[in-house]
Image (cartoon, rainbow over all chains, first blue to last red; front, side, top):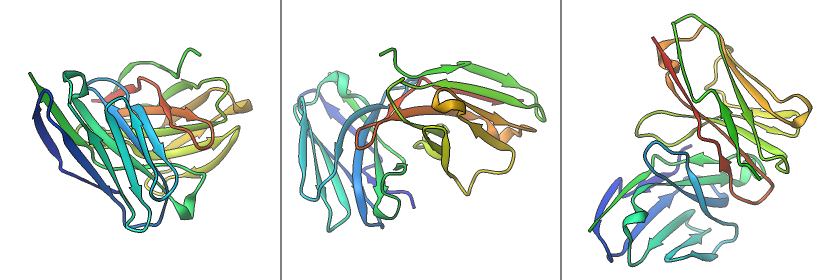
Length: 112
Length: 112
């Protein structure tokens, strides 16, 4: 079953912060985050493997709450280059080592 | 590392025709995935290989779809008797275990 992302879209001014949430109805083995710009392929941002794990990538970080089957992506001091659609991909424990199921995406627009 | 290559980039075909797409993964990656993406949606899982073995195929995939990965190298995805509903971006990705996917640029299929 597809994870649910929220919000569906967000508009920021350069320098503002945003949080994107990803929630699954299944017990999760891992959570991935990807960014896709218009007309391009999704690009891997980070993977979270353990409950409570947090990771950072430049000014983008993420957390994984294994008990709640949720992950959040944090974008701080946003830059114009952060614009795009963000997808979480979840790997269920029942299919661990297999493939990802992606959410519908969150469209992020950063304006000057 | 030349990334994941997909060919062709675009394909326009008449309804009822067969089409075949090719994916060349990153050579060190043993896992290869096919996804389909329509406008405004996240990538939808189609099938997955580990080396040359096809380990999982989506239940949503009809018998018109078939994929191969001979010798665990490149992969082909064939769609027989294409329908208008098959129009989408077909994405190939490769990975190693416990790391993120590297996606190719995709093949955009238009069925007229």
